[in-house]
Amino acid sequence: MCGIIGYAGGQADRNVVEVLSSGLSKLEYRGYDSAGIAIADPSVSVYKREGELEALEEHLPEGTVDALAGIGHTRWSTHGPPSDENAHPHTDCEGRVAVVHNGIVENYRELRDELEAAGHVFESETDTEVIPHLIEAALEQGADPRFAFRRAIERLEGSYAVAAVFHGREEVYATRDQSPLVLGVDDGCALLASDVPAFLEYTDEVVYLEDGQFATIRPSGIEVRDERGALVDVSVETVDWDPEDAGKSGYDHYMLKEIYEQPRSIRECLRGRPRPLEEAVSIEELDGLSRPTEVQFVACGTSYHASLYGARLFRERGVRATAFLASEYDVERLPVDDGTLVVGVTQSGETADTLRALRTANGVGARTLAVTNVVGSSAAREADHTMYIRAGPEIGVAATKTFSSQQVALAMLSSALTDECSRRFVEALRELPDGIQSILDGSNARAVAEEYVGADAYFFIGRGYEAPVALEGALKMKEITYEHAEGFAAGELKHGPLALVSEATPVIALVNGRANTDRMLGNVTEVETRGAPIVAVTDDPGAVAGHADHVLSVPETHWRFYPILANVQLQLLAYWVANRLGRSIDRPRNLAKSVTVE
Ligand code: AGP
Image 1: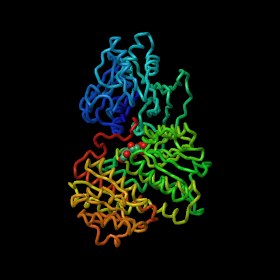
Image 2: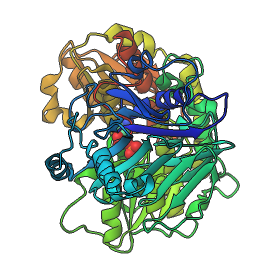
Image 3: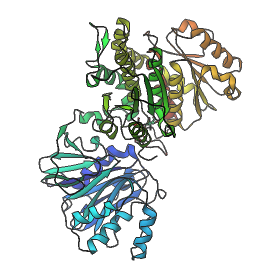
Image 4: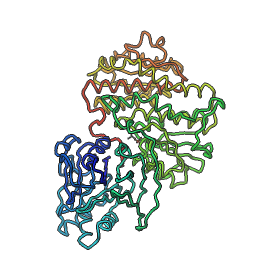
């Protein structure tokens, strides 16, 4: 949902334009409707273009520029369609201030009316443009830039991460409220961005700005002040992500790279948690969190599918558990008490719907836990407890490695909080990376994709633990191929969806050879009879012989973990269909990685 970056630095070997544009390339997953930068050189020069970053790059100044500070933005449109005018940065009437913004200014209509009445002229349809004009108004009243910035921000209602540069100032001013913003520090320069990978090639020393704090970044370092203007003593943390993790490492797409990273990301997720000798799982950061009487998961999209899987694991261990779509959690009276644990599952830790649900739960006295990938994210900071899935940066908009890490994390969570484990469970957890590797090494998903490109629709079916993965398989297929795909609990087919099935709709059936096999095969037969081609994703080829047109194999594992492995085949299938159709795989149309609006 928009990415912002800022840089202030004086090193001769770093050109401010290059730093900003390289940072934006790492933030494009947050939006790619337009991109722009502004540099204080020392007047304020703005370059912006509709479309992906490449469109902007053709118009950027080449060679050395006489500027030590600048800001950049990549946009996911909310107010006003993608266009050059609506691209950020936005400026005041005189072009002396430029602003980039991620979030939504809810009261922008009323502010704009007020500013227009005072003679300010607007050039865009965005909510953001009120900010530089508010700053301009404060400057006209005699405020200095830092104070003018603060005065403008005080007028805003909504969510925002904002950064601004001023004519003649070699610094960037920034603040946040309910939108992510992280600062980076290094010798002779300072940076800020919506997300760490944007500046990871320059520094791994970061400061997570809190809501309501104001930062000034300069070549000499950073300064953070609280809402009242008092200096804050911030703590600098070191992130342990490798810059290489944020690149494509020779793969054509981030998505493919991230699918192939799963053996490593699962190993990281497991590190130190399963205890073979004790036949137990221990999650150090959750020591002291007691067995809940009830678990409510709140999450969106892929994370919701992982939550459906997690809820089932808890129920099987005798704990009442439900997965809610976070955007639907907001009911009048939530049935929670102090034994309820509300678990927000969110890769980014910044999804607005999930954050709101967690806040709602906190407000009514439930204990909250964030299961997230991003250290220092809003979810991690706001929840009572945090468990990290340790998947490393995920850049592709389609969630892949973070989904498998979420499933593994929730499997461990259900075991740790209920104290129910077995030797086989621990062993099977530890075998997962090898299981995934063998799928990656031997998958025929590309050939199967080739066979069915051009189908009318793709249907995914599964029962029990497989049902959430059927939903996830369909989500992956639709978001990156733009083709029609639906996932169903297999038993539901006959209650309606069967009407859609035909010879032109391949059905991808998750057949777990150790659970529900016969009933699942009954559902496969239902679609087979209607002429649908069957792609069986299975660990039991014998069971599907005579039914399946194609088989995507899954190695043997604990029956509860079959869907974690099977999902890798579905990721590859979606990837290869999208690749064959020439889709924009890492940045599918209309989508953004981190959805920070409700
Ligand atoms: C799917 O591939 C998506 N990227 C999307 O559904 C995502 O899972 C959802 O927006 C929630 O994001 P989060 O995990 O960062 O909260």
